[in-house]
Image 1 (cartoon, rainbow, N blue to C red):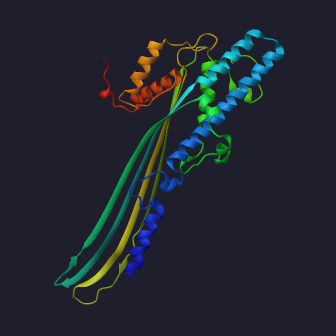
Image 2: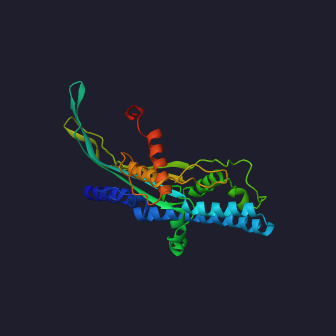
Image 3: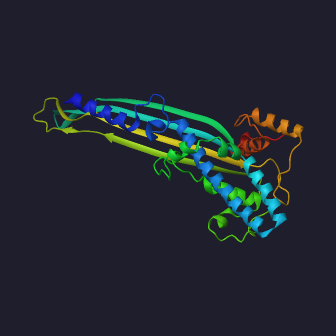
Length: 327
C-alpha cells in the first residue's frame, strides 16, 4: 500500500512539472524556445504586412488623386517602414519545487497524562533556470525571409495560461509606432474611415523608438497528503495517526520579452529618418555591442537604435538606481 502511494506521488509530480532537472518552457507549454521565437516573429510579420498594405492603399489613392507631394511622401515612408529595426530580448525563467515527506504520531498513556512521539521525514528538491537571449530583426527581413507557410501553420490567438506561446500584442505596438513615427493613422485606415490625409492626432516628429516590456507569470501547485488515524487502546506505545507519504509540487514560470522598435534617427517634417555619418554609426554599434546590458550584433543602424532603446528600458526600470552612474 505504501509503495502504491509513493508511486502515485511520483507520477503526479512528473505529470505536472516534468520532473525537470533543467527547467525549460517546453516542460509546461509544450513549445520549445525556438518555437516561441518563431511564433512571435510570425506575429510581428503579420503586423508589418498589415502596416505595409495600409500604406499601399493610401499610395493608390494618392495616385488616383494625382497628388504628387503626397505620393512622394508615401513612397518615402514605405521605404522607411522596411528599414525599421525590431529587437526582442527574452528572459525565460522556470522554477520547480518538489516536496516529499512522511510523519507519524505515537502515543502512550502515563499516569495523569499522555506521552507523544512525532517522527517525521521531509525531502525538498528545488531546481531553477533562467534563459536569456536577444533576437534582432528589421521589417524587411520579416517580410522577405520568414516562410509564409510556416507562419500560417502556427496557432493563432492568445494563450491565457502561457501567453508567451500565443499572440502577445505586438501588432498593436507596431501600428502605434508607425502611426506616431510616420504620421499615418493605420488604425483608421484598416477600419475604413481614413480620409487619405495624415492623422491630426499624430505628430510628424514622433518617437524614433518605442519599447514594451511584457512579463507573464504562471504558478502551478498540487499536493497530496493522505492521513491515517487510529484509536489507541490501552497504555502501551501505539500509532495514533500517520501520513505515510505527502507529496507537494510547485512550478513557477516567469516569461518576459522586451520588444524595441526604432528608426535610425530623428524624423524630418516628412517623416524621413536622418542618416548618421559612418563614424557615428560605428561608435553607436560598438557602444551597444560591448555594453554591460543586452549585447548583440546589429546589422543596420536602425537595429542598433532598437537595441539601444531596449537597453535604456532595462536601465530605467530594471537596474537599481543606486547602480546607475553617469560620467
